[in-house]
Length: 279
Image 1: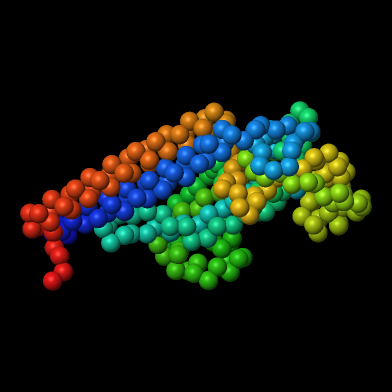
Image 2: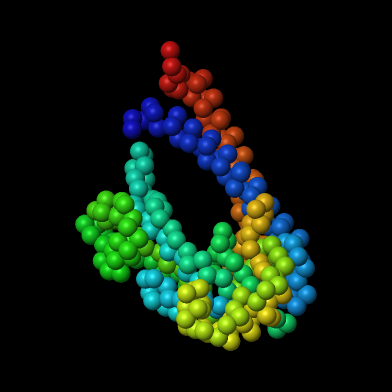
């Protein structure tokens, strides 16, 4: 890029970045206030509606994370390819994401609730990742992509890839912000046949375990259709409030400042005649 085009392009990019930063700061402020204003509930006395809870994970169905093969209560994998922009910057682009979809119990000293993690923003558990340099993908990643018949897997494998795996293990302490719903009245497991449990995804746990903990569950926590957030984190409420506060400050203050500075640069370039305008 020639020097005459650098500052106009940088100024326009600054305008876009400033606007995006302001929007991100506003969202962070909403989340900060949501965390602050939502009361902390106990499993035994949880009220229906938006709640926050803290406790430990107890598996309802024991599964193995697909890459590390660790026993866990829930997993998520993410496949990324290396993408280059027109300006030469490189970044990872997510091309496939998949979750186990397994519900788990959140247990405190008063009881437990059943958590359906679909749609949650998860920042807890063990996160591992591995990058490849291209011209092929080793096992177990290639076997996993082939088993799912991902149509572009051969093209992705030509270039660098990154494989990320997050898993929630039994006994992990987590914070959950979501919407509590009444627990279904019917018990999910009414037979002792382990073959039936295996068919329903509760293998390696057992009928007695599922029946006992389902009966104790006082509510089901999941994301509501209009909820602004559904969070599962291993950070404390105070830590998250502080982090979202910093993001809100940076976005709400820094975003407009960057936008004004970029606009000033464009005006000065136009005054000096260095801003290329269509004729």
